Image 1 (cartoon, rainbow over the protein chains, first blue to last red):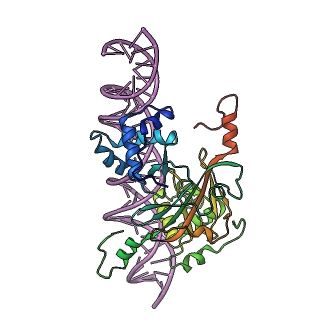
Image 2: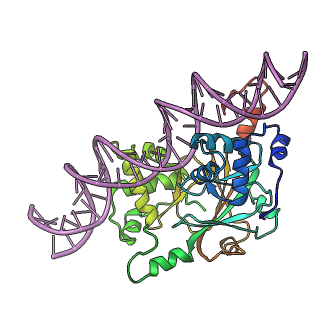
Image 3: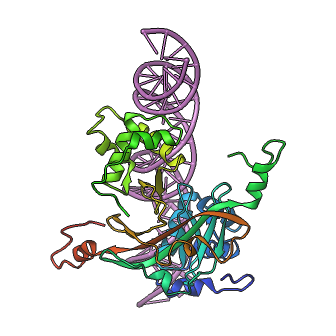
Length: 155
Length: 155
DNA sequence: AGTCTATTTTGAATGATTCATAAAAAGTGG
DNA sequence: CCACTTTTTATGAATCATTCAAAATAGACT
């Protein structure tokens, strides 16, 4: 599901989509490969290590272009900032902590196909199925249960 | 899945949660019962028929209070405005047209329980599973295929 | 009716994201 | 390797949904 340490030739992957290979796009993809589920803001801070002058607006345009050609997947849970990950086309799902916003991958429960096929389509042609399990992570639960006040999270 | 024409005693339902029954809350619930998946703005226009002076901020506070006590469910697909529906606790899912934003209910494919249980929880206590099938509805597809230009939707 | 408190209203603010336009860089052919 | 064309990025401002703090109102209980 993740290719930790696996070196990817991003410039050629980018050109294969018809886009030009730019330092911004490569740095964004490398950052996402190393740290999935990043927000635009987190991406900005990561990419700045390679390109100190980059701005948040450029992050948005860069990441949008990568979403458009299918190299990146955009995750939008709730009212908080969108998150991005390398598109693996493995139909995996996500668990999401409402309190701290943490997101983790989970494999598809029912194999690949069933998740993509709703029982009714209401005349729609479906191309994506998003499955998100919302809850609370143990760190946040511990912080809530802490007897001496909220020492970790303040929600 | 929907109780069309089924009269519900909203004031008592509201009081049963510990909240006070107000005209704003009743009108909001009645509106949602008749037209599910409404945005805050659509809700505003509906509720204004009963309460012409109501504002969008009040819609937000009213609907939020109803979400908090479990009478209303908030749906957040993508970057567009959140949508609301009466909470039926039937674990149903949604199909969503990306172009026109239309949303329809679909029954849970695998019964009630499995959808609530991811294969891994990564140490999270899960309370909700959201399943959304994204695609394009036939109306929008027809508009795109129309030979004489875009007569219906402009995306 | 009178009181207390929850709720709504009002006006302003926030945060994520998008939009023009201008500047820079990537790819292409000579 | 240079000049050219087009894509891409940077810049500054704007938009949208949503939230916040404080004041006004209205349920609910006696």
